[in-house]
Image (cartoon, rainbow, N blue to C red; front, top):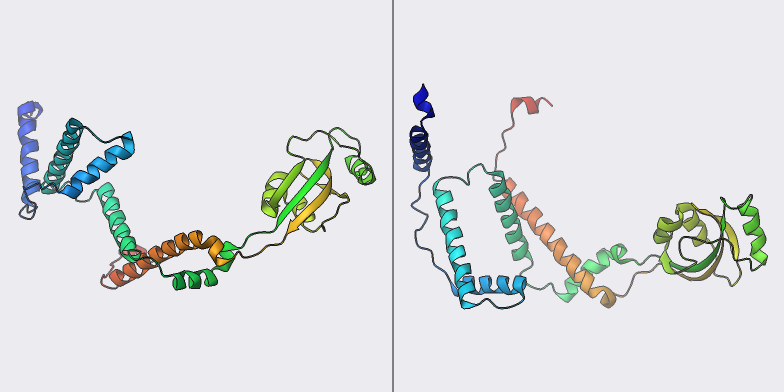
Length: 268
């Protein structure tokens, strides 16, 4: 069986296999004419300018065109060889392109202002601005003091500066969630329950120790005016239209197909 190891035999076998594969796929619909349009040229030129920040020279443009032709020829020959069949990457790319096509059709025309307003009314909570708090604090460390809570309570009526703090001593227009990320959820909840006052309040415990705080301003949560968030509403409405279009398109296609499951899955 040493003849199987002969490189010439291997080469002929591979050639025969390719010939057999190509015989299963008709190439009548795959043209040997590669037509380059003005749109193709402009697209290649624009891609170059986007990457290089300058127009391509004549030689560079010809290199781009030659590369485009090479890729197109290789692509068509791959189709003739059936290399796109059962290829997961090609499959994913084709699904992606069909999805993009459906989305592009759905948003080809600008969404009317009345439709944007209707979308905004139905989704106001998505645009709600959370309550904001502006406050300063004095920190009392449990590591540096025997009774940090008692010291902080006494400091309510004094100007004692407290201990050095690794973060800021003053915060402006922060939401409860943002404050919770910095000091802990319990601290943020306690702070949000305070009234605005020129006097010190607390003490409030955080993940670091105890704090005497002065709540300077509290902005209640609210839904902004439609025109103040129009740009965001427009983006969100387009995305919703894309998702709805894909969902409707798939549901329409799904009705045409009969899915046959293996017996093992039917028993589950």
